[in-house]
Amino acid sequence: MADIYIRGGFLITMDSKRRIIRDGGVVIDNGEIVAVGKREELDKNYLYHSDIVIDAKNDIIMPGLINTHVHLAQGLLRACADYLTLIPWLRDRVWPLQGNYKPEEALVSAQLVVTEMIKTGTTTFLETGLVGRYGPDNIIEFVYRSGMRAAIARHVMDQTGYASFENMLHEGLIESGEESFKDTIRLYSKYHGRDNRIWIWFGPRTPGAVSEEMYREIAEKARELKTGITMHLAEVKEDLEYMLGKFGKKPIEFVHSLGLTGPNVVLVHLVWVEHSEIKLLAETRTNVSHNPASNAKLASGIAPVSDMIHEGVNVALGTDGGPSNNTYDLLREMRLAALLQSVRNMDPASLKAEDVLEMATINGAKALMIDHLVGSIEVGKRGDIIIIDGRKPHLKPHNNPISHIVYSAMGSDVKHSIIDGKLVMFNRKILTFDEEEVIEKVDKVAYTLYERAGVCREPDITWPIL
Image (spheres, rainbow, N blue to C red):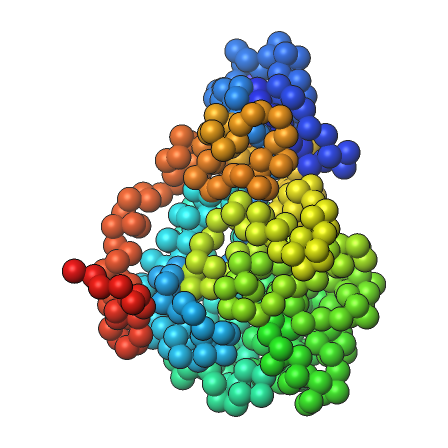
């Protein structure tokens, strides 16, 4: 007997040989993948001997997507900060809203984001940084109950600026270095490694909000605990100018001097970096989370992703948050990642569909240090699998599933989602919590937040709403 048998369709394994099995099948038992192959062979042993049989004859079967940069607290802020560059975007809109959160509101925001990610094919994500006012324990408990995998970073800070902009952080988000560091350790002790689905990381804020001494302490403690670090870096030109002016170092040189490079580090954005820095990333095996929609919307620039991949840097994919994307749909993010590199290099082959699919699956697993568990469909790995409806007109003809996924698919095409061998979504219905209950309370909670913060009370639209 087996728990779940998925049969038929294109099976994209993302294994070491990158096999694509036409009319394939995969079997999951006790959360683990126990068989991968042709449907006609697997039918002999599993068709009538599995608790759940999923017919995917016309569909695409692939590993669950891994989103390596998520802001759970920004779900309620969608469309609240359009048409701004990063500094005023943070100072005038995003941080005042986040600095006014109550724990129950932050939880609704997280629930909304998790709902969207499950329904669009993400099975694992990296949260960039919770703070105390959000009630991180409640959020982590919900993520666990949802069935998702997540590395959840807790913000650490001991200053209040951003780059050369002093005292820019909203007062509601300010925490002491001792408070934020100790609470990260508390969360680590309570949750890290739970069922191989929850991990606690350090999430130091961007230079200007963290001292060099604190950065070094974070790097040392993360190595001691064998956990990860994620932080924004070189997102905008102001970041580069600040580090060159204050420290005399380029962004990657600066973090490397503090111990913030290595295989347990995910640096986010890296738009304003040079070739010598890219080589340093490769040498230190530091991971990068590329967030093309956010970088484009905020006019931050286009990260040199194709150059990074060419040098051997492990580049993964992220969506960023509600007010900078404005979606958590990683399938849509794939298309933009490919297209922007074509424009940047004036070369349509500079980032191929195969490269992008690796970024969203196995590269993300490697960045989170869990590629031994997930990121591909192989015997011995955990059963994190999504099934995409191959009968959608924009996914026809059924000739090139990789191209279809990257250039044509969208999150609403995901039919079923399996995480750790358990059905989390079936026929577009989430099974682990009441999604309708989440959607029902979002608007009321969001507008209460907007009134308190004095931000986003009216839609930023020039047309009349009658």
